[in-house]
Structures are given as structure tokens and as C-alpha cells.
Length: 394
Ligand code: FDA
Image (cartoon, rainbow, N blue to C red; front, side, top):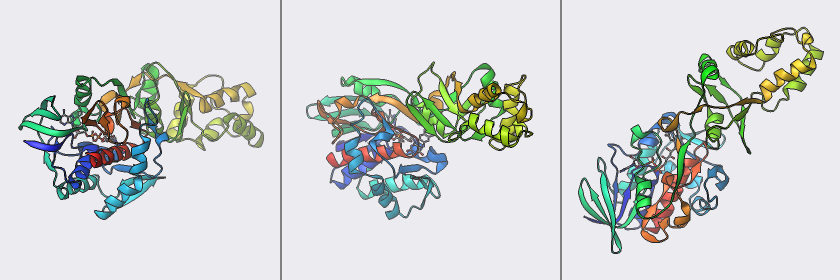
């Protein structure tokens, strides 16, 4: 079998790329070892797929080369994908500023992509594995479970390592290495933290409680809700900061973002001296959390009228609320991570066509590359943008 373009990976980037190449008149085959196309799309955004972010800029992506993503993101912008889903009659909602989700189901995004592929004459082979890839002259040859295939261009869109049960593999990285391309170290990103010992028990006791937070690690800070879980901490702010956190490091949590707790406590002590500390806390946090705080920090300064607290005691409480420093034990790992940090080094890749500079018949797109977005629809926008740029250049 001979194709102009073979894409490995029927995920977000692969399907987008295949449709574009098909529309450009190429004979295109998409191969995936999974039994369904777009499995990660289906499970994304809680089943509603946060398919783009209207505020997409290169600053929302992590990469050794922060300039690499600029060209593709400029050419294919969020409004282009919005126009595409609108053409297919998909209703969507802006759940948080800039974050667009399907109003009904993530299935609709997969339907859009598969319909586009069908209209573009793309063949999709599911339940198909690739055992070997080699370069033969100007083409790429693949040994697959459906037989030998020759491709003018081979596009690798096999994604990252997260959620192995959904079909994630390191195939793309192995292939890169086979052709002498560096793969930067990978680690889970957008992933919940685990805690150990006392803090694990404490978090478990509060499982399901969500709080406003500003969570920092080094230079980065995310002001979004956090969530206690049975194993540790999750929620948007924790997922975001997990992408910059390094094992062994600490995170700083401000539980009262935008409020100077020390100043507020001193003011309350003057204005309402008879008010209990727990009442003051109860105006800012859920009841379960206030109870937990008083249990975590027993002692002389246990719940009393505010007038009883010295400046030092208020400062200690304020520090607990504004500057809680915590050392996570680790993360939940690939099992629940949304993305993979690191990956195929973009130095080897053209940012315009996504071809390997030293071997233009081979291309890498989407998450397999060392380009990872923050939480909020950026990762799909990268998949669409890199897929379109590559597909149009095939
Ligand atoms: P993707 O993973 O989509 O596709 C890769 C394909 O390659 C898969 O179909 C896989 O089966 C196939 N494959 C892998 N190895 C293979 C092999 N050896 N042979 C054949 N096929 C192979 N992002 C976002 O922007 N908004 C969101 O709401 C979410 N939500 C979300 C939730 C959860 C739970 C996860 C895990 C991830 C998200 N993401 C997200 C991230 C987003 O899903 C991810 O960045 C994109 O799917 C990446 O698109 P790709 O096409 O690169 O890989």
C-alpha cells in the first residue's frame, strides 16, 4: 500500500493534520492502535472537552524553545477552530474567561474531526499497530498489522505518556531516537499532588473541600481554586503549579489571595474584639476547613475572642493563611496527568512545516513534541495549530 501521507495517531493533532493534507489532495491514511479515535478528546474537560482558549498566546506554553510554537499558533488561532465547530453545528459555552467547552459532549469534537477526515477522503485504520519504521530512499516504510505501507511523508502524532489505559505509549519518542533526534526528559504535568504522613491524613479528612488559592513555585503563581483529595491536593491551581514543580521542592499556598490576613485580623481585633477567631475564619472558609485549621494548630492560641490574641499570635495565624509552605510527596503520575512535559526536542523540527530538518519525510506534531500548554484549552489549541501547519505543508 502506498500513501502520500501516513499519520500515526488518530488523536487531536493527527486527525486535524490528516484532514488538511486530504483537502490538499494527498492520499492520506491515519493509523491508531486504539479501538476508537480521539479517546483523550472524549475524556477531556470532564467529558465536555475544553477545546480551545481564546486567550492563546505563546506565553501559555512550556518548552525548551519558547519561540517554537509562535508560528503555528499565529497561523491557526482559536477563532479558526471556533469557526470550524460552528460550521458543524456544535454548541459551546465559555465556562471560565476564554475557556470554551462543548455545551453537550466531547463526542461532538471527535465527530467534527472524523467528518472533516471523511470529507477530505482520509482513510482511518483503527486497531492497527506499527512494529517497524524505516527510511527507504525518499520514502518511509512501515511494517504494520495491516501489512507493509509506504509513505511519502510520515507524521508522528502519538501524543504523550499520560493515561496509558487510554492508549498512550512512548512510540513517538522511540521513533525520534531511532532517527537520531533528541528526546528531552519527560515528566507528568497538570497532575494532582500526593502528600505523605500527617498531611496526607489531613487532606483525606477534607476530601472534596475546595478553596480559593494563589499557589506559587519559583517565579510562577496561579490564582485559581484548589481541592483536597484522598491522596493530597488537586484543583486548577495545583494542576497548574505541578507543571513547574520539581520533585523534592516546596509550593507556597496563599489561602486568602488578595487579602493581607495580618492586617485584616488586627483590624477585626479593633473593630470586633469579642468575635471568636473561628467566626472570622468562618467568614472566609468552609466550616469543615475552619474546624480542620483549629485541629491542625492547637495550643495557646486555640479559638478565642480576637481581643485575646497578641500581635505575634495574629502574625502566626496570618502566616498560616497567607504563606502556607508545603512539600508534596510527589504527584499521581502518568495515571492521572493531563499532559507530558518535555518530549521531542524542537531544535530538530521546522516550526513552519513540522518536518525533521534533517529528514523532511518525517514529521512530529502535537503533544509528542516538547511543547506543553497550561490548563485551560491551550493543549488542544496546540494540537489543532501544529496539525494544520503540518497538514497544509504535506
Ligand atoms: P493524543 O493523545 O490526543 O492522540 C495520540 C493518539 O496516538 C492516540 O489516539 C493514541 O491511541 C495513538 N497512539 C499512541 N501510541 C500509538 C502507537 N504506538 N501506535 C498507534 N497509535 C498510537 N487539553 C485541553 O486543551 N483541554 C482539555 O479539556 C483537556 N483535558 C484533558 C483531560 C485529560 C484527562 C487528559 C489526559 C488530557 C486532557 N487534555 C486537555 C490534554 C489533551 O488531551 C492533549 O494535549 C491532546 O489530546 C494531545 O493531542 P495529540 O493528538 O498530540 O495526542
